[in-house]
Length: 318
Image 1 (tube, rainbow, N blue to C red):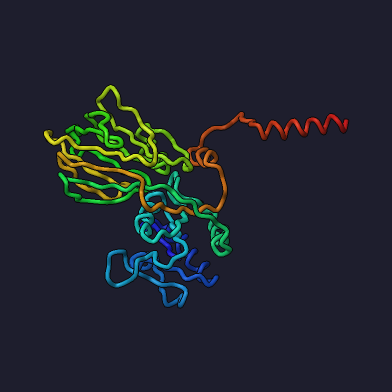
Image 2 (tube, helix red, strand yellow):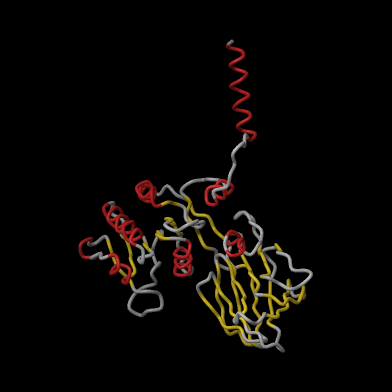
């Protein structure tokens, strides 16, 4: 099992050490990044043979961090989980997030449920659901200059605060509109509660297969959030005869500079990200819990049936 943590936080370090101790005690081999093991103050020799360390991806001194791992436990907030998604994307390792952040929409467990989470891992009482991703290509002329992916969103944004970004947006090979804007967000259903949500885009249930395109502060008559088919190809072109340059952000982690004339294409990703679920809670319940939504006064069909059933039995007994 791969264990990744936000080691800049003391609470995350404490939880990570607790996972290492408990999981290795159950005979599960825990793999840590060498740098994070040092941050945690963990001596692999003390856990032999239950704990091993590897270098970050891209080094020549060790295997891909997620190779051969059944599960990746991620301790931190959504940013840490997005980092883990980047690191495990090629291997397809399921991610189990333990939330130590604020909203923690991608996380499944909270920090006060460490013991029950460990028990679920040991007993393999969890499922993994696939989340749609987007693949992103950046072209300059006919040359492909960058490729990346995103679990939440890819955003094209203006590079200079004082200068608007002039773009033409395209859906399925046909131009839709020209916008002077701060940028454009291309989101997945998973990312609909992140940047897309802040930009005024719709919340889309994770089971819906769709792509979202949301303009940021667009100066145009038609500049509404759009939801399109998962088979659609979305594109934005930075107008060539303007001085405004842009920047592409993928999940807020990876960037590509976009000079005038750059073209960005976004389509459904070839490789989904797998998120672990310990509970079969409806997405509606997750929204209510994560955003602290008020549902006071709700009775609902099930509640009405329960109340009516009790009332009928009570009348009969009387």
